[in-house]
Length: 111
Image (cartoon, rainbow, N blue to C red; front, top):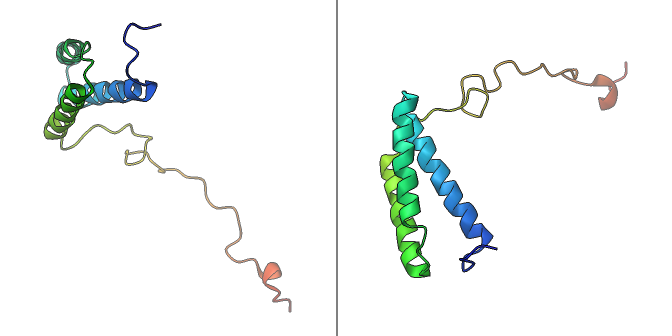
């Protein structure tokens, strides 16, 4: 069991999500993986610095500041995985619709 159990699992998931969004945003700005790794270590150090904060008000302030900072640093043209929505391959080769364009038999137009 962890030493600090004052926060819920939802809070932990939120902090993990925030951390991942910071890393993803840093990767959007950097094309050189070793340079990104240096940035990732700085981001990790910042998160570790605030790890021991147990006051909910102070933590809420830290998280709000982090969200504002992330929004301010957001890349204007982030990388999107090609097969994800908005990616270059999203629905590029969708299979054709195999139904007939109009089902005359079902409509009752028998001649």
